[in-house]
Image 1 (cartoon, rainbow over the protein chains, first blue to last red):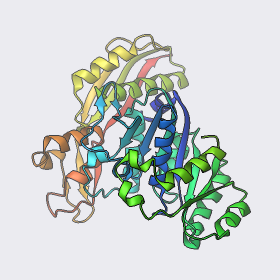
Image 2 (spheres, rainbow over the protein chains, first blue to last red; image 1 turned 120 degrees about the vertical axis):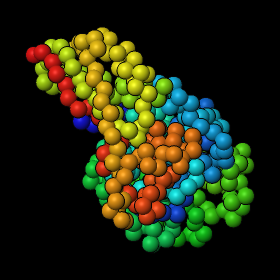
Image 3 (cartoon, rainbow over the protein chains, first blue to last red; image 1 turned 135 degrees about the vertical axis):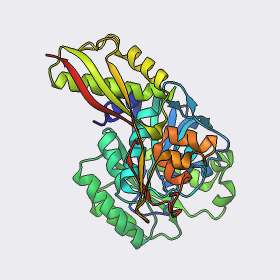
Length: 241
Length: 137
């Protein structure tokens, strides 16, 4: 018998809101949105956790400049605090090596992380999701029943094709969707807005492509001053975050 | 004391199951400990006994029986079976400790000792499992 599922609810019971930043497509900026969302909330005085569930390609730690940190053992594991954010990632255990996990392993890792991580009291737990609607998404839906989804796309028709599938599934499963953020925009096209509205999901706005963003990666103070953060703050206001 | 968190999951699952089965007292709980997780048995047993106090239904003192689940790993590439001990000596302390926390990171830190492939599976001996519960109705 699998005992870990019995303890997950207890581990998450002192977390007020769980927001999964997701997309059907990779490379659309989920990790950037998840990390800057966590930073924004932390800067506004909230107690924030960030869980990177992109187990093959974790990147939130690179965005936040996390180095030489490791969880502390105390009746489980307590994530280290990075710029006010309790940050948990598989990278503490994989040391940036390639991670060849199969589906069953992914589910086991998620179960283990959820069972042993002691988050304590949080206002928000932000989850940086991997792309698609595979094991990680299904496990978050299964084990984190109160989770809400914030969906990210780029202006590309290719990205929106995959994002539409994710949205359709979330709607079918009656999961709360806070809305869709259009990231890395370079034109005034209304294609994404129309597609999102067609699916009866809230379109939240655009984050403009920022050529200088790369210079701020790994430096949360600099990230907070970027155009991306400014655009994101305007979007988050619409959903009272 | 990451063992504490795992012990907590065992106690909660035991109580949940006992309630389903309408047990009035839990007399014996058999728990298998996968070799890969490298649990400190003494700490784990201490945590189980501490967490068992004032549960409903009550768990009898010394109810927990711990058994080791020896590991078997099977390579998907060459088909060979092997044990954690076959690769453990090649792991450094950090790698071994990482496997203690998340057994699946063995795919990151170890390779099949026969063909060098990372594509193997944990057939047996992964982590902590609840094997059986005995009690009085």
